[in-house]
Length: 515
Image (tube, rainbow, N blue to C red):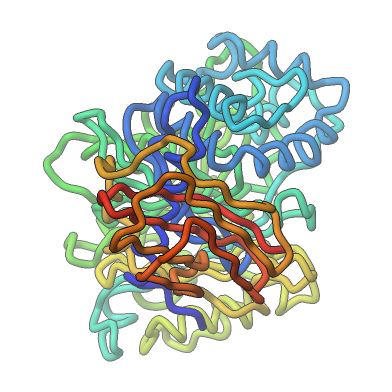
C-alpha cells in the first residue's frame, strides 16, 4: 500500500511553477497543477470559474484527452459521431447546463494552447464524451454502442462498524468495471475542483481524462456518489424529453453547496438532485451515496437510487428496506432491488449477502475484503476491474487501486491512500518571484545522462541550483556556482524540474527529460 501525504506539496509547488514558465505567451496561464502522476493515475487540481477549470484540465491533460477521444470515443461512435454531436447541441433531448458548456469550451481551448491537435474536435465532442451512457440508449439511435460499465458498492456504518477501529463511522468500497480498453486504463485521473462560484464547494472526480462530470466523486463536505448501470431494465429513453445526463446530475449534487438548501450536507442532497428530473433518465442507472455517520439517522448516511426512462422512473432505498443485506449495510450491484420490489439478486449480490455474517464487526479492511473476495472481477475470473476504491468520509481518506498498463486489474493491485485534507488544500495561485524570460540555456533537452546549463549574464553571486524529481526528491544541488556554464550527469531516467535562484533572488523554473 502506497501512502500519499504532504510531501507531494513540494512537487505541486514545483510543477505549478513549471507550468507558468512553459505556458505560451499568447495563452492564458492555466489555473491548475499536476499533484502527482504515479501508479497509473494522475492527480490534478484546478481552480477558478467553470471556463478556467476546463481550460486548466485541457491544458494539463491534453495528450491524455487526445488518447481517450481518438482511441475510445471516436471508435465507439464511428460514423454516428456527427449525430451524437447534433443531439447534444440542443437541450431538446439531453439538457446540459450552460456552465458545463463553458467548461467544455475552456477544455478545448486549453488543449489547443498546449499545442495538441485533435482533428475536427470542438466543445460538443467533450459533451458527447461526458454523456455517452445517456446517448447509448436514447431513442435507439446508437445500437452499435456498447460502452456500459458494471459496478458494485458496499456501504457500512453504525452497528456494522461500531466495535471496530471505525467506531460507527461510515465507509464505502466500490468497484468500477469496464471493458479492458487501454485508452481508458492509461489515462485515469483524479481532478480536484476549487470553484470561484459562491454557490459551489470543493469536490473531486475519479475517472478518465476529459471527464468534466461525475462517474465516481466526492466533495469536501463528506458526500460521495457512485454510478452503476441498472442492467435488467431494457427500456429506451425517448427523444424530446430533455433528460439531464446522469453524470452531470451527480456532479451538481456534489458541487453545489447544500443542494436541497435545508442547512445540512447529507445524502438528501443527492436524492434531491436525482428527484429534480421527474421525467426520469435516458437510460437505467443505479446511484449509491454515502455521508458521514455524524449526519444522524440511517437515511441521511446512505442511499441507493434506481432510475430509469420507464415507470417507475425513480426508486430509492435505505437501511429500512428489506433487501436481505444484514446490519447497517447497503449493497448494490447492477440489478433491480427496490424498483418494482424486484429483489433481483445477481451472483455478486448473493455472494456478498451470504458471506458477511450478521453484518457487524466490519472495519475498513473487512469492507474492502468483502468487496474484493465476493464482488470483484478477481473473485469471478473477470478482467475488467478498472478501479477499486474506498471512501471513509470522517477519516478524510480515499483509498484507490487502478488497473495497470501491464494488465493487472485493480482488485489485484496495490492501493494508494490519499489524505483528503491534502487533496482539498488549495494550491498556491500566484508566484511573484518567478521570471518568465528565457535567460537560461539548457541543452540538450531531452538529454541522455549529460546536461549542459548556460547561465548567460545571470548574477551568480550566492546563486542556487536544484534539480528535483517529480516525487520532490533533490537529485542535484549546488549553492556555490562559480561559472557561467555547468555540466552535470543525471543517471536517473524521467522528468525533472530545474530550479535556479540567481543572486538577485529571481527564480527560474524549467522542465527537463532524461531519456
